[in-house]
Image 1 (tube, rainbow, N blue to C red):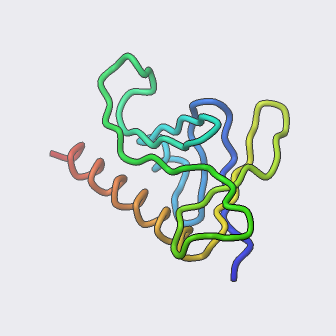
Image 2: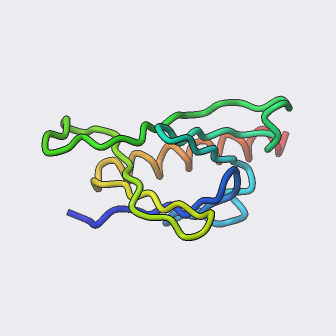
Image 3: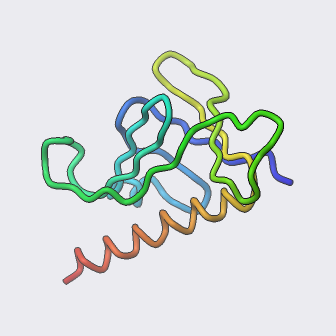
Length: 112
C-alpha cells in the first residue's frame, strides 16, 4: 500500500499531482473548505462562469474505513499551505484519472 499522494495547496490555486503537469493544472481550480476539496474548471473567480467538476470529502474515519472510500486527510500546514494525503492507492488512481479526464475534455473543447 502506498503512503498516498499529497496535494499542496494555498487557498484557491493550482496544484500538482503525479502525471499531471502545472500547465495542465492551469485549466483547473481547487477550493478548500474544512470538509471538502472542490474541483472546478473555468474562471478562478467564484462569481464568474465555471463548471464544478467534483467534490472530495476530507474526513477522518477513525479505525473503520469504508471500502473504496474517497478519503483525504489533512496531514499538516506550513504557513498558508495545507497538505492533504490520499490514503489509498485505489483512491489516488481514481483521483488522478478523474482529473486527467477533466483536463482532456477541457483541451478538446478549447481546440474546437
